[in-house]
Length: 388
View 1 (spheres, rainbow, N blue to C red):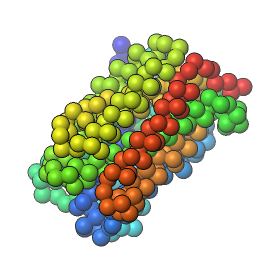
View 2: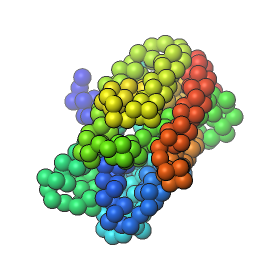
View 3: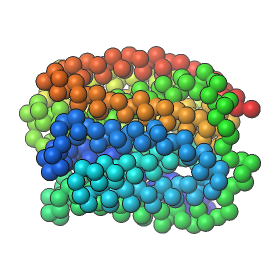
View 4: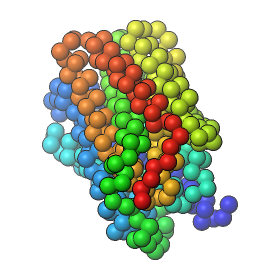
């Protein structure tokens, strides 16, 4: 591998590491944030909801931005805006908290949509492997941030404001590494993303979109509320945070291996179904016995959710024939999908307030997983997305 290729792989990996800390780093600190800012449980869940809404609402601008300045420069811009957003949200009260979170999430939305196209553009013969690499880095970023924010807070003496602002550092480092790639001549406009018309008319698009949205909803519900669920079940705060980090760490290996294996087959149905069933088992464990073998439930949940996320992104990269079409499908699937997903944390917070416990919210989550199973079956079948 040449030096340029090695730097390109490293740049993709480090950029991907920044796609979740701004979101995942909030969850272990959520009780402290709510107490400091004066938020209700629904208001606390709304932090994640605001971010996931932005992931959906602002994804569609990515094809237009990439067509004008290129995918590589779009990725660089996203990294810089993430750094700005996480710095802003710790500067004041609730308005700046939500504003900074929205700013960071907008940048993440653009990068989410860009990454499958970047992989298709730079690694056309290694889509399976590089999808696994970048998805595992996305998951690793979530795992590291959720595991380290509490120890960093204790070790530095910073409040939640200072700790979350530190998340700007890895984003700036990734931007520095990606800068040489972004300074290269952007790809020709003729190779840019196509209009959405043909993509929107394809049934494949909506199967993939449903899979993306539902697996994201069930993931962000757990990301937002899992530590709180364990806290209310009687586990200490540090253990609750470590359990969340465990399920995210398990996803690292799963999301690296599954695309490599599933991408070799014409149909990804067996993998998608298996991922959904494991997620169901993890939900059941949290619902029925949260303090009995919680580590086992987190491992099962991590395998299921990591595989589902990786498969959704792999299918996005595999179905179209070129980077432009991949970016168009990615924009539709992730934009609509994340708008659907945004309802999850807010709905769970509301159901928790109304019902007074977690039985009703988790039962609703199990119902969502049944629908996800059907969507995954349809999206995983062999198909080609025609965009001409």
